[in-house]
Image (tube, rainbow, N blue to C red):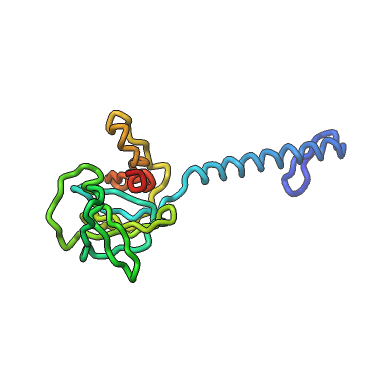
Length: 183
């Protein structure tokens, strides 16, 4: 039997059958909504600050970035680890600056006007990352990020979260905890 709103009722017309019919329909609707919500959750957008090192593009979560400044007045600290370029005085706070080229075993280059320090906060600590240049802020769908093949890296390179694909570009996404805090 069908009423005037297009709802199909069970032929018995019993309240029990009608209720059962509507409960099944409601469950189907809930399953559809849950599937859509799961798909939406799986495809999160990551907001990344991108920068370059030796011609490659890297990205870090924008939530960790405090500010980006020119790479000037870095004071060398005797006895610091090789990848710590020195310290800077940022509005009265002394901040260590990690040279990512050295940290990632890339060759050193002469200082340029394009170099920047990306100031980040990580585990309650402020650090600066010296990079060749800062590109832009991008939104990247988590669905476009793949793990880096284990054949492409050595076990001590666990600072790479994955590689994102955006408009024909590959962006290496860093795990800052492993890249900066475990040296």
